[in-house]
Length: 511
Image (cartoon, rainbow, N blue to C red; front, top):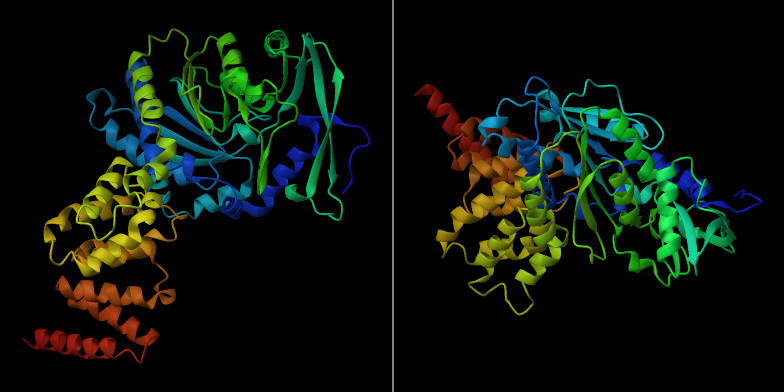
């Protein structure tokens, strides 16, 4: 690995070149290591839809033109399908929005991502409706695709800014220093994997004035030089540059929704001596939300903030719309949906609802589980946490308590609606439980949605055949049984049922 002879700014180091190479190389498999659920769960998607709905109702919209939504770094596309499902459903309840057309642009810098989106069956309905389109561009260095933008644009940046370029500084007793870095391999390693690299830091004194070409960024530096007694802090220049470019692109103004790891409280940096980062396949640096908000304020932005004491994920909504009326509804909904409810802790919330002392054999376990899933907007990952217990109880006890079947069937249907291609565990549980409680239509629908390649899962054909038989759909049952027999020729049930159904079909035709 070649390393520069002299230390460089953090933003100019090879770390960000390697970051880009990682996502180009790994494509969708990058998210086997990179976190995704916290910003794409059903609960988060629904909360975003509520905020977007409030923004649309608060804004002065020209109904003759569409409102554009731009998702930056859409990556695995888990968020998009759920968000659009919730937003369009909510919009239909308001007469002022029923005639409004929305356009949603998923974007990423990697063509590999776009190729994966085009084959995503969960996104296809939105493409066919003319709502969804895919674009490739670099938000921090190239302008977004040209569009006629009359109305405000709603921009979504989930887990994006923490991967963009940042600069590091140290403030010490009124003095300001630039933190430069030198990236080398650990002893005995030669790869470019982040886990094999070491970042060496050196500092040198600088003047804030004139450091950046953008005066507003230098003012932020000067502010930190004054307020910190001893701290290492980051300036998220990638995020600031994205914001600058988007402002010039969105002629009708924009709302910028950010959800990322980082902090808002300046005290978080006091006493910090080294640049903090995380490695999860890629590398990421916490976002300095205070710097982002200070820059947006110089642009006339109105910002709503999440919990300032948040330690893991921080949310904010900044609105920059010329002549915008007070966004009272938007601010209220943001506070309710993204601050008070804390949707980013969804899985932990379910674990609190299902504590260890609540035995799955307890009669209250299933009602508590269903209530928890309803509270968490029927999130598939949350469902996986309790699916094994639900399946076991379905087999053992629900035949005695059929009054729970309707509520369970609704839960299964809603969870299935929120599935995406990353959910590999939930579909099998959904299929088996829906069959066990006699929800045969749902069983067939889940099989069609999630198990297109049934050659790999012959047991699915067995449940599908049984479901068609229970529904009186003999022709469909016959087709499933034939395929099942081909895959498992020694299965006695399949042979017997195939012969029986064939005889019934023959007698029906003669009759």
